[in-house]
Figure 1: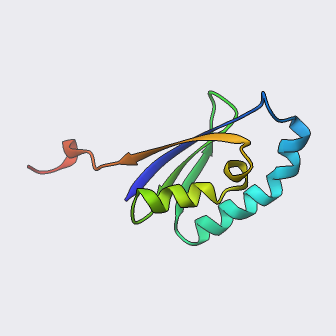
Figure 2: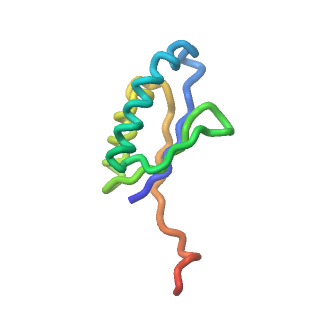
Amino acid sequence: MEFLVMSVRRSDAFTPDEFAAAGPAGGARVRELHGQGVIRRIWHRADSIGACFLLESSDAEAAAAAVASLPMARDGMSDFTVVALVLYRGFSAG
């Protein structure tokens, strides 16, 4: 299954220095998940301070566990929205 994950930093609760300190561990975990094929693509958001990524997992529970393993999620530094995706039927032949 594929999931769209959107995050927004909790800038109201954490300082820029705290985000900077969390960056290396967060980047390392994203690289691990990417290497495992869990995170397929990732982007910075243009509309807010956060990220948006395409995640692949066996089910919603596994997707939630992958997101929870991110330091920014674990430490409550970002809010995450996880949306399950289904194929767009407009491209099917029938």
